Image (cartoon, rainbow, N blue to C red; front, side, top):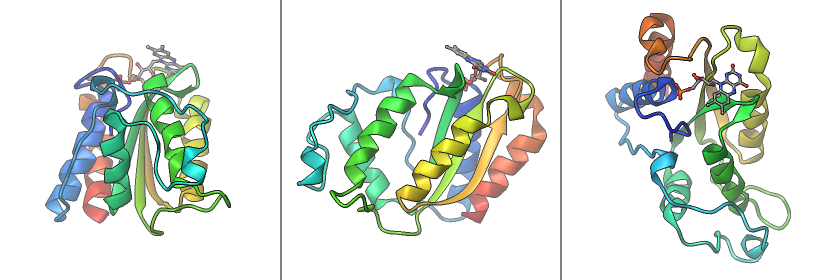
Length: 177
Ligand SMILES: Cc1cc2nc3c(=O)[nH]c(=O)nc-3n(C[C@H](O)[C@H](O)[C@H](O)COP(=O)(O)O)c2cc1C
């Protein structure tokens, strides 16, 4: 999934290359651009602590179902003020419905996650906490984090086209899933 509003931006392109690699490895692929979907943030109603799904029925319902079914998920977001984008964060909170009343994940264990970020600052260590903390959430949900791909210097949406190293890493990551 792509949490950047920039279609054909750095996150979108890197996520696509991971998906291309996974497709070459035999995966069936689905891609979601969060910015093109209509959805709400978590309402904190705790319905999902007695039922096993989120009560809200909107464009995220299908994505949450797809995550339940998937063997691997690619999570992509730009860095906005040190964090993942608002579009991504609203989706992230809705994954609370994957956690039961005992704080155990309802997801089948062993799903793989790939995390893709892009930031304007050229030094990736400047904003690495966002992806590291999201990797922690992934582990709570039972995912194995296969790779974190971090793009720096991503001010221009097509800056990643100059980063053969990252494009190669994205392709190899997808193939290895
Ligand atoms: C609202 C907003 C906040 C941003 N905050 C940061 C930031 O804290 N650190 C940074 O390095 N870049 C920041 N940027 C730049 C983006 O992270 C950068 O352009 C990124 O490559 C965008 O990814 P995309 O090409 O996939 O859209 C910000 C951009 C926007 C629009």
